[in-house]
Length: 110
Image 1 (cartoon, one colour):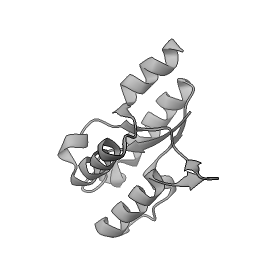
Image 2 (cartoon, rainbow, N blue to C red):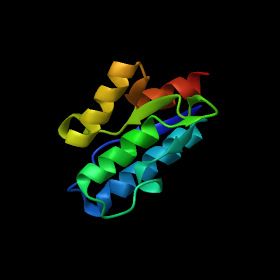
Image 3 (tube, rainbow, N blue to C red):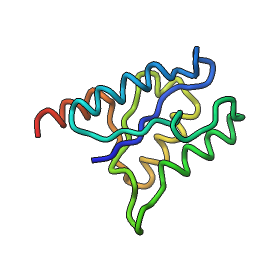
C-alpha cells in the first residue's frame, strides 16, 4: 500500500524534513511504501508552487488509478495552512487519511 505523507513544512527548520523522514521509516517498517513532499518538490519553492506540486502529487494517477492508497498525517496538521488544505482535498475526494501512528497500527495488525 502506498501512502503520501503530509504535515507542516513552512517555517520549520530544514523544512521539517527530519520529521517526514522519520514518518517514512515508521510507515515502511509497518509495511507501507511512503513518499514525502521533499522527494517531489524543489527546496526553496514558493509556498503556492509547493502546494500546487504537492496536491498534484497527492492526486497523481498511474495507468488510470490513484498512485496513493491514502495519506499519512504528521503531528501539527491542523496548525499548517498547507496540510489543512491537503487534508481538505482528501476529505472532499474520499481519500483515506489517518495519522502516521494510526496507519502503523493498522499495518502491524494486518
